[in-house]
Image (cartoon, rainbow, N blue to C red):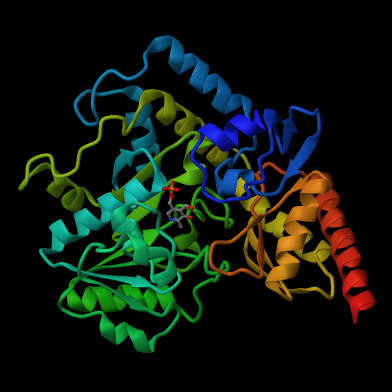
Length: 399
Ligand SMILES: Cc1ncc(COP(=O)(O)O)c(C=O)c1O
């Protein structure tokens, strides 16, 4: 299968990890050679409840027996999408009451940007340096990383950048600004959290100039940071909330949520201001609804903070400079990019799945399923520390 994977399926890197997946359950992925890999990545923060959680699988099965796709988004009332949107509204601040369901994170970002321009009648978009919001043309235009965007230019216009956590840069938000878009916790940049009421200050500045604040919660959202959404840790409410990844419990989904007043603008001038065929798909929405119900009906979200403590206690080694992030959105910052590289590759030999971050090359992500057990945490941390010990001995032998 690996040969066909490399030959017929488009690749994103010359050296993919290329595990041949046979099945996956809980915190483990089983490969075709009958090895069981402990998963500290969860499909890059997507498998919130672990692999093949029974609540998600049953919801999919039940829905599959009723109906699949019946109509483009927004025309028919379909229970999974309606209930999902309603339950989200119930668990969000009052101003975030209406949700538009789409098919992926980047598509939700596109919708949010369009909505902000439509709602303000302005065009300026401000994003943060080293942000990641996705890979379609609009999301890509929010990426301030020349090497990655240059070959695809021209991008969309009127985008400028500020430094995340810089109060000084807030002056750049002005009357021309339609929206400021930020990740609540910067992911690809190295799991960088907002400091000193930064997000509150951004929100205040947006209010002063009549701009909307869009928070991208595609990675921190759905419980990863000890709250249902990351912004709840920082004392503010965005004008538009964007979600995806962990929302679907392993199925592809994205969404953006705003007030009814703002969201309803997409119905008019132009009519059908944002449309999608498969957004709100009943099978996907039923999986997302089951995921949300499971998160709200258990202590999994609160437990992320206990699990964070366990990770921090057991991820101690001279080659680890820092463990960044919050809850189960953690990144080990190593002494060098080479060590990070070797750790990920060696961990694969030891049947532990780790992965890199996009921009911070010294980082290794720890974003396991929220359902991970204490024993699994200890087992994985033990493997990491042993590998680092081995790498350290090699470094010392060379010096
Ligand atoms: C913060 C953030 N925004 C947007 C995206 C894009 O989501 P998707 O890959 O579903 O398009 C990602 C995906 O990694 C992300 O982490």
